[in-house]
Length: 635
Image (cartoon, rainbow, N blue to C red; front, side):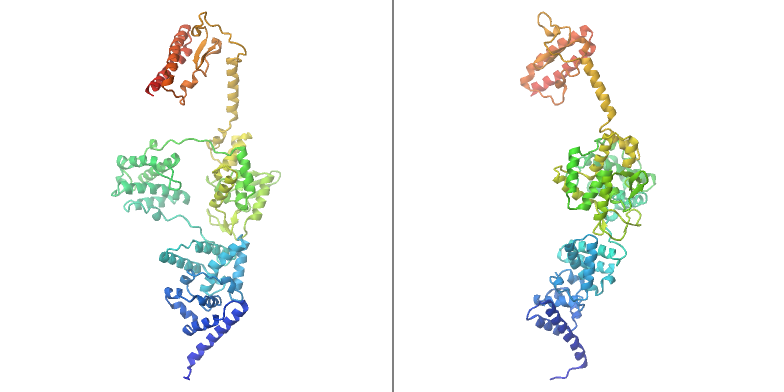
């Protein structure tokens, strides 16, 4: 037997220890098979130091005997092998939880799962996040849970991105698990900052379709507006200007500067194109309001850079007020009483209690969705002898307000407090200060999309079709108007800064308009008089020519009308002939021709009697009949 050198004897003992530990592990877990130890021995003969295996190229590491998987899992869970994130994100750790007992990371995994469940994750969700993210992080980092850092998260995310580039496989499940694990570690106090939600793309990325010659001016303008506008406004402006930039890139790719814009060559064709522009979200034509917003943004761009004296500014004005489409003025879209009741009942039955209660609170207090989600845990204020009030934070118009609460709303907020997930304060999106928000779920603020999905579900269950969250605010305001609340109170409750904003709701059910309508209707009925109960009493000439009767007359389909002069002209006579929905054809030409002859005679009769208004009415009818006769003859 050849002599064994010292270095070989040093390496021999760890191998024996590993094999002994592995045998004890198999006995403890009751897993493995008769060849498991042989497979482990064969691997260690080639790699006495298991970590040296990780130095191989990824392609070599991925080609392993499936019978070795149990031993590989043992090595990773006991800290003997850190295989690399590139390997870990390509392999399923199928026996992870089975082999976890007795390993150095068992306690950390249990602690993580408890932390995840404490902020609202279900046990199965906590289990999935733990194995997909934290388990792999602890294996590769080779440390305890308290020692994990955000750089470990970044390294794993980079490996996921590299996998996607090389294989085309997405990594949304890993991204979701990493984000959730980051939130859990934040609430456990292990990392100091929560994960950031994915913000909008950079301005350069938003303007990628603009020609290189024009892109710097677009980006510089948006950067300048970032100093005076909130980020959401700048993002919206970027979207609208990107549409204009793409139009220029298509119609005039050689345009070198905004200063070379021409009204006839560029602006007018762009304005015309808006009439057929497509909304990329739903495939429909963009609305008139969207058209107006795009034109307004373009106008602001050109006006601002002109006032700022930029070299890119056109020499003359290119967009005018008349270029902005006139917008319809629809009434607020409130939910009728029955629909409001059915929606509330569907929300009460929801399993997603936090989102459903958020929508019920929005309906009860008339909040905007942004104001709703910005509510903090201490938003309820008790005023002695004046009840409970809800402090609504700064919202769309940068103003705060107080809204009175009834007992039902207070009970609803108490239920929300019991449902929300606990955790550390989160940075406020406006100020960055730590804040305990009222609506937190899985350790983060409840999002608008979660509310919209829950509202869509409840509206579908209630048989209402599509309902927007803002309609809940409209419904709140409409209920107040119906109850007779004053304009000043309505403004205060809705957070409006001008009476015009609140008057939109007043136009829905204006009590003054109703009173005036009823007064006018009573007066008209008094002038017309009661309907005759018996045969007509107005005499007809002896020759039965009704057109000669001393009365106000009108030819009707299938007969005629006689009214006493004191009653005045009937406002409903011949109303059908003047209606835009009235249609005629060749079969009716003879009837209309007879009606025209009668109208001529009645006009002459009214003129002779001095009834000028009545004569004018017949003349207008004659003109309308001429049009209808021409249509009937053409048909």
